[in-house]
Length: 589
View 1 (tube, one colour):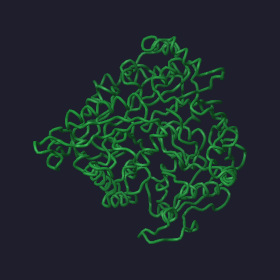
View 2 (cartoon, one colour):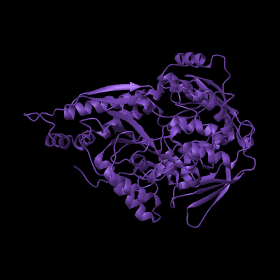
View 3 (spheres, helix red, strand yellow):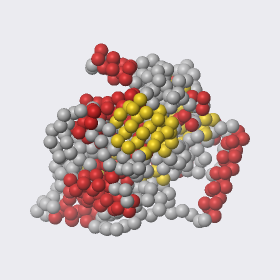
View 4 (cartoon, one colour):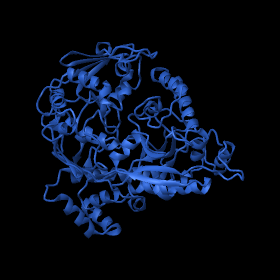
């Protein structure tokens, strides 16, 4: 890792090598258009789906939600340990089922209104209301009576009146919120740190819903109207261009928020985002860095790929023939050559995925239930009847769906060619911009669709819960009763070894049925200005903007010295075989 003479000098040096300074400056000046530079700027990866915390699930949206909102608890950006958020503390009953949260006396909304326990109770109720269509609503079903409230059915399927008084979420007074769970849940507190469990401001939302029933959402999320409780407030929004945030002076910890303004640019092209970073218009770029540039970035102090609790996969629409046949899904999974994708396309240390979970999530190690063999895939399809009289495979053309990105297209082109070579399969590519892409997935308007899942918290449940029947993030049409039973049992199991066993058995079913085809496990690809302090280097790549600040020259030099020493210690122990430990192979076709 080499020291940089200065941040701007190193950026322009790389720009000259890769892209040309003149082009960078043209892009930068066109983007700024006379608007003052924010204290910090990063890209959101395209136009965001919504600014409503109960209406989004994507990583780009989640990062913006952490600017605007704060839930009862938060997570340390370095250790991911649960910390107080809007609640200054909590206690848990000995049975592990009842949590009592005490809100901060100085917690305020961005308009100065006090934040109350009733705000959280109403917001959780809003999450569970069917009309809200919150994709994380089922995550709250571990609360007593919550499932029945959302579905209008008892556990046995019989109709039940929707009655909020039966739900275990109660504001005991202005600052005390009680939550009662159906059963003990080890991951409940980390779950509450997700942006979706943030409160929304009832007093500003409900009047708009009543007055403008059709377009209340766009009116509510405008600057000057949107009232939030996080470290920043929305100051400006230019659709398709930029979101500007200003420090929320009513935030309880505003005195420790260093950045006064933050811009989130709606840049969907990662090449464009990289250009802007190199020109000094962005301070952080994350995501699908163009793979052709990765070799040039490796070794720089502002690019440090690390293991990341996420998986890149293809969803399979199991409601469409021939993808409704497990043999076809298994053939697609086993005929891919993942190492080729990782090494020739991605190049940043990503590892081939033969399980849905990464190699290590806490103390959980996933089973490996399939491998790679084009010959096995061909025989599987022949035995299943997908061959003509001469034994030639005969499958209809399939469509591979992905959101606009150079890397997603590169991967799709390689996967399509591998399937053509191994199975004689014709695969057509279809790309869409982010919002249309998500809508199509939700409607099952695809054959195979590019997806990723980044853990919400470091626990197997964060990966495996989404494949239960009816889960809002399933989006494949797949359902398996035995899988549901295993996951349900694991949620409340308090014995760690038994809990791991239940989740392992569930993942075996998932990887046997293959409604999703894992491709690779992620590494983080943050390109971030070395002067940024408080930036979270954690396995979830989760950032807390309230902690960001600009380092002094002395602190930056000390950080560089420590980093050099760490690199020397690693090198003295010999070369690593990769960013992940090798996965175990339990079964091969």
